[in-house]
Image (cartoon, rainbow, N blue to C red; front, side, top):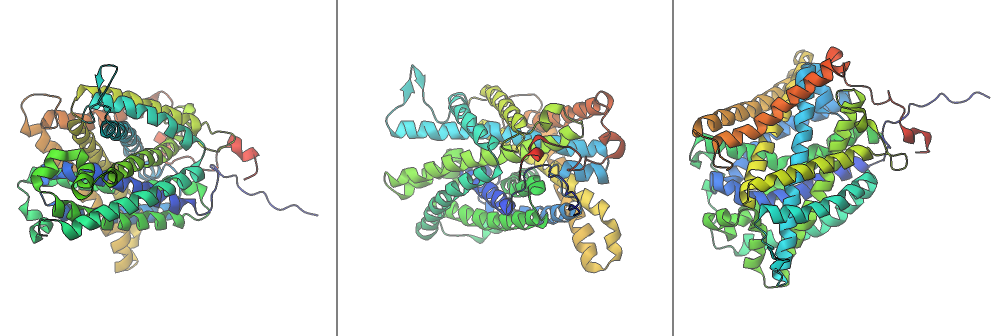
Length: 498
């Protein structure tokens, strides 16, 4: 009696249907956080034109999503952009894509810990507790907020280590509450707000300057960041098309939610109120619309959103490092997979530790709203960089499709190329504006040299790490530009039933 041919081993534990859950939960919880901290932040830059920029930013982001979907069908890999760009544009831009993606995620975890701490302190203030052991429990202080938020990071790391499925179930439980609160309060604001909806809100030409437009667009692109989480767990699904479906569903859901919330916020709050409240705008909206205890519900929703956003970020970040580790562009630590849970547990713990260290460095910017603006700006620029490179990689890889008819040429080459060039052009213009707007360096989001230095240091560090991978680790990735196949390693959990 002959035995069946051996089946290829999975690189990570496969979970039917989990990708849609990861994508929608990750992006939706991130969307709540973006709305909470972003509406006031973007108002400081573009005034009341946030709806216009959200619509404009969606167009290149949709082009990027189509590029991700096509590349994923061709080569599913948890390293996604790092693998795809390396193969199509070369190993140096490929490594840089992977590097800035990971660093952006770590910075996101770092500053979101401060948001979690801020909400905890706001709860404490509502309960009458305004100081502890002589320390003022100020929800606008970067230092105190971060210290409290780091405690929450420890618990989230433990949950991320236990696996994608448990993390997804947890996120959906939070998501139901977040959506109910956010849609309820924003819907009420939309109906009862004192400020009439104006067509000028949807007119980008009302923005005061090219620099403000570029910075606002980069921030709006950052708002959508998170839909691509599904593509980091494609090796854990039976059909790579699940990732594309989950990512696109999440992206369109985010657009609807952002437009709904931005109009609702501006119906209820004046520009001065949005700017003054900044990252506390969602809590302020609750106080305007309801009495206690109902006014506290938006704060609880923001807390749940920040918690789930950090968790959803830890999962794809550790998987991206796993892809780089198995190529020896990063160290062997990142390839260690937990024998029981089938997750890159060691990498997840290290990512959290690095995020905690970056959060401590943020103490140098004492005002929370200033720290958040600087962090979001840095992430927005590097998100534009790696999205742009990945879209160009799609256009280059499938350039032969231009001979297969107008539809294929449009979807495979023209749309990805234009989307990538738009984002890279915005980033370059904004970087030039930062370099020319100041004549000295200062730790402030109003200082151009400081705002330029953050993404510049990230990119330079990536080039240094690429040189180490090429000349010290002698990674074959820098010879071929191709990522290691997902099945190339026999991982510990391959010895257990799946």
